[in-house]
Structures are given as structure tokens and as C-alpha cells.
Amino acid sequence: MKTRWPEGVRCPRCESDNILQGKSRKHFSIKTETLMQGSNLGLQTWAVAFFLVATGIRRTASMRLHRDLGVTRKTAWHLAHRIRET
Image 1: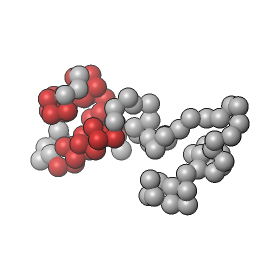
Image 2: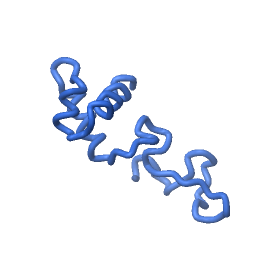
Image 3: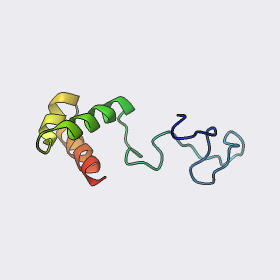
Image 4: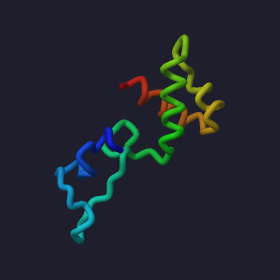
């Protein structure tokens, strides 16, 4: 968290550090405004997927992610696509 918010947690949209007040407060997490946004997968799954794609000798197939991470083939394809896009 210190890497993402070195000066303390701030709203990624309005840069406010007053994130707990207000009736219409926005919810955000460490995945907000990253390629992981909107994903139900945990950070650990994403980290392993990054590792597998980055250390693969050739392009890491989504079928390998499917087997190694224990996710559906569709999820593995979306993971690989998002990671390669970056």
C-alpha cells in the first residue's frame, strides 16, 4: 500500500484523503484504476498470473493459466489478454 499511496490512502478520482465521510462516498480498493479493476480474482491470483506470463519462454497459453491457477478457461483467457495488453 505504501507504493500506491506513499502519503496515505487517497481517493483515486478526487485525490481526497477524507475517504470515510459523505452519504455518496465512492468505494475503491487497491485494484481501482489498474488492469485488475472489476476483477473478482484476488491479488495473489493476479500476481501468479503475472509471474507465469513474464517468465514464460514463449507466450504463456491461457490453457496453462487455466491449469495452474485453477480458474475457468474464459477467466484464464481474459487474464492473459489483460496482462499482454499492458
